[in-house]
Image (cartoon, rainbow, N blue to C red; front, side, top):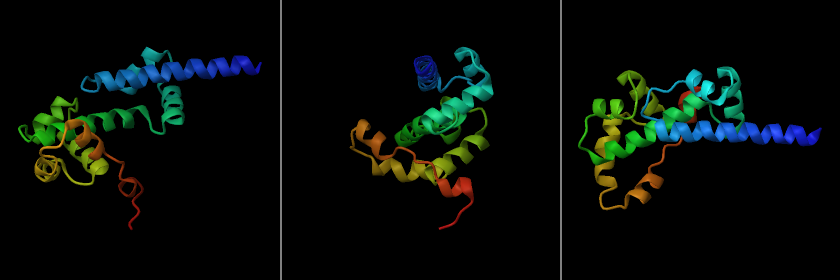
Length: 146
């Protein structure tokens, strides 16, 4: 019986990796948890619970993190407005985009663009991506203060 349970876990992990890969590929498309769940043949609630258990965050949170990472790269270029970047990464609400960006990065998108344009100048993009990778601002989500 343990073998069947292990096989079920492996099969679930394969499905979850496919969902994560789809998010990585299609982050700029209109994706929602229900659509992702249908593709994995799970209910939205089950997908969310399993995804969070496997990867440490919900599918929606993972999607928004991918979008914000891409937005950071576009903002560093400095040739697009914050609104253009918002829509380019698949967000349909500038307010939601700005709030999530500020939560993950710690500063609003316009401030980030102004600060980072010069900070990563001359740096290879692969290094800039690693150095500027967003880390969830846990204080913003818990309301705790240092």
